[in-house]
Length: 229
Figure 1 (spheres, rainbow, N blue to C red):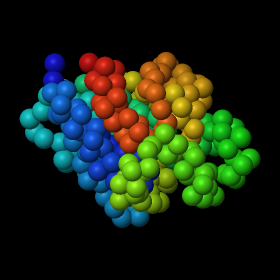
Figure 2 (figure 1 turned 135 degrees about the horizontal axis):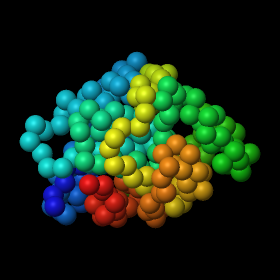
Figure 3 (figure 1 turned 30 degrees about the vertical axis):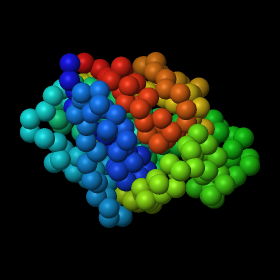
Figure 4 (figure 1 turned 180 degrees about the vertical axis):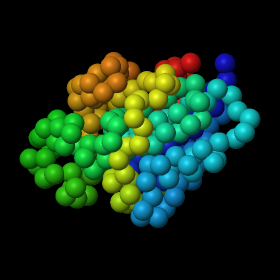
């Protein structure tokens, strides 16, 4: 069965980061897009969801929404409104009703899960280039890292201040796909949060937080394998 994937990036990342993954999905005979997102500093998860929904083709195969990291605050909004066949949360920040992304770290006790990193580099909002390289890019080859710099940016403030607007999780089959060597959101941490918030066990993919850079072909295969529906 052919699927239509819509790919939503994480914090401060341009959707172009999915280019190689999209090509790999197309090689597997599926459709895939990563729509442009609002760039202004007031843009919220709801604003991002409206932009993604506006970009969806009117005629498409079964829709699977893929949301990475902070994009998990947007993905369920898209999936609910579009009547998606499935939702895949990749290395996600799984939101709770009424929660802001700015509150999420404290609410999930994420810093305790990465205590050794915080002892070395301080809290995540103070991390410099050394910490960013070790946490996010440890399994991304240097050439890919240099080429991907054009996709780096600063997430809008609005992404962290809007209370998540859904009253409950949407009635869309959901999969939590977790990189086994994610240093930002470790596997054991994600297992706990997925159980507590969604009552789900996680699926795994090798590598670190940025699977679309470190192993895009494997990511494409895993998305097809785990896609609900």
